[in-house]
Length: 114
Image: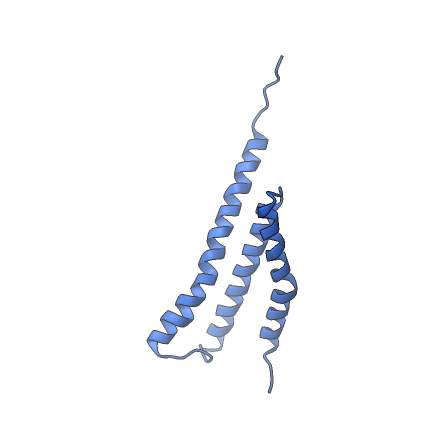
């Protein structure tokens, strides 16, 4: 059997990079590490990038690997795979908000005490 080079490459990156990085992000949140939101941003952006490549590759192939029946296509393919877009999207927005808030706090003028 022939394997799809794109899928093998993407899953290799997922297994060797995104998986361990996700675990480090989890540990960073448990320990309230200062880099936790930076890690959240990186992992979420990586997941979204993979999702875009997944959907774009399938669209370019004319949805050839998807069952054309409406229930299967919209519920399984779009709906269930959409969770992998929605969750990282929400986490990406949250990370951006947290990092922007931290930067705003650092950018505030400091009043010197006497």
